[in-house]
Amino acid sequence: KIAAFYENILDGARKSGISVLDAVKSLKKEGLELLYLSGFSYEENPGAIEDLVKAAEIGVEGLYMFYDFGENPEDTGYERLIDAAVRLGGKNVLLVPGMLPKGTSYREQKLTNMVNAFKRAVAYGQQKGIDVCVEDFDGLDSPLCTVDGVDYFMKAVPGIKCAFDTGNFALHKEDEVRAFERFKGALGTVHLKDRSLTGRYPDDQCKVCADGSRVYAEVTGSGYIHMEEIMKRLKEMGYPGNVVVELYDYSPEHMLEAIAASIRWTAAHRCFQCTKASLR
Image (cartoon, rainbow, N blue to C red; front, side, top):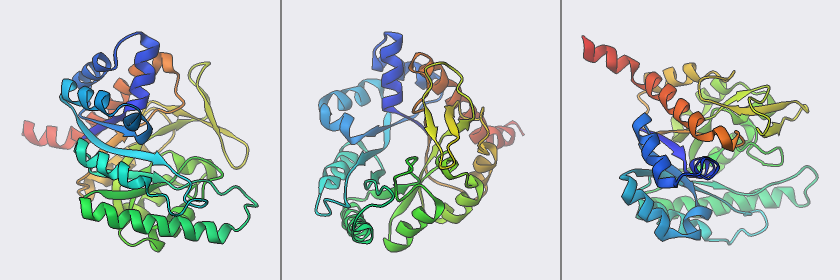
């Protein structure tokens, strides 16, 4: 199924002067089937999120949240996130474990703290039937910003899943298709984030890469990321999970139209084979 980030929809709805419910209903007509949201949004007003899901008659793909396990390895906030996923009918949670800037003191100890926190989170998630994921996070201070960084946690934490983000390996100019092949055996969810080298609108925000260059968010299927190849490989492997279109840093004024276009592209590339089969 196709999901979109609740926070992206919220930004677009606010800028467009419409309610989030109306925005979700409009995007459902384009093919939106699920929401993906942050623990911050849910904890701020659980009732509002639950009411939105019910009123829009839409499901929840999963939730994500930021922590600092390096400094606070005993933080059990992931339990609330996993419990929220259970209540909302989600299947996975993404934990961002904190940053480790270059020159961080006690780096190895903090990595160990992160690993141990993930191990406890995975165990709790397994009790609740929720996959716990790590992501190739697009921040240069993240220990998960490279293929090797993701691989470190995947190997160190049995049972953890990969929330594969197609556009985040761009910060170190790593090939997303090769990265996909490396992690495809442990996918928990897939974020379809496309990239461009220039912004489409003046208020687009950029990410600064390791070499100092800049990349911008782009409508799914419209940038330079090998989106078609990744969709093809997902189908070939019989991937049973969901995909999430992601447009963080895109112009809020044009956010809703960008989400709609991303959903349409994803739906077309997800379904063209089965559509041809049904026509026969």
